Length: 92
Image (cartoon, rainbow, N blue to C red; front, top):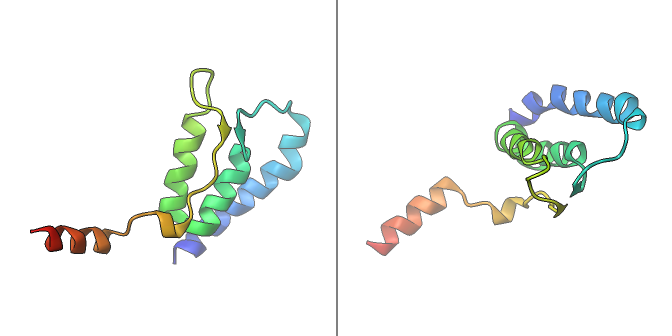
């Protein structure tokens, strides 16, 4: 379901990459660029988690923000809510 919700945003990103980005100066502080990051985040994590990662990345792109290599976290590296609950129950 979240993949279906992400599809229109993937189309918007593709439109931006094809028709707008080539005519603007390359000033991105991160690698991969924010549009590539957003596309990959939506493809890997779906609409909600991927959208949140994309928004966080876009808001961190300012002169006082970070820079450098910032890949999309893999699904294996993101904690699952059910596993967090299980680990809390095991600790008690």
